[in-house]
Length: 266
Image 1 (cartoon, rainbow, N blue to C red):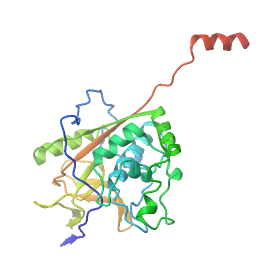
Image 2: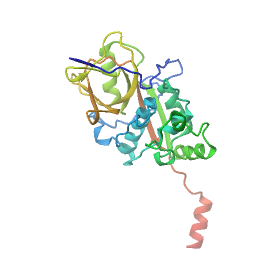
Image 3: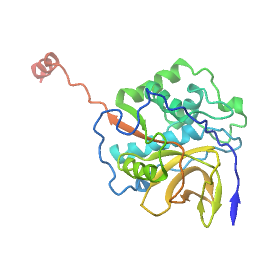
Image 4: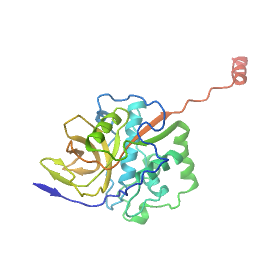
């Protein structure tokens, strides 16, 4: 039996250009963070991108959940960042957004915590969700504070290729980061979600576990029978995939002059 509930949840297909980095293209040494390829122990609390309104912000939800997962794995921090801020700043449209644009906006502009610009049931309209627009200088400055602590970057996992090549690269990428993927949302068959030839990707979500020959596990921004987790067929033909790189900036040390002053007065 096939279960069909197909709609666009906010994914706009990107165009991978020559200046975009593909797996390994940044030339930096990545940290082997998860040889088990299982990010589920480090996931933040699940969030719904649809409450009283549909936000069409799956690209923001997937990307930020990947970052929050890395923050927990690397720095033992339970963070929850505001998707509203990034949606407004990156100019999310009613049709959605390009996940590369979202990641680039975060890389250049930063993040704020959810309580600074929250999404809850007091928001009942599109215009209310996407306000203030443009972002206030106070919000921009607050977001930049995140960049004083972290450096953030991202790479595409593949640019085309066969199904087997994509599977191999996804398993490799999961060693370093949870991976956001584009999917055809949603078509279910035999207990797993599938994508048939000719199906168009309509959603951006987070791949959190891989095991060769077994269903992929994703963490979604929509509930499925009360659960944010979904199983996708091992032979699922993902269209696009992106990994994320998060590092803490080294803290500046006091100058020799300041140390001398300190020792003079103690």
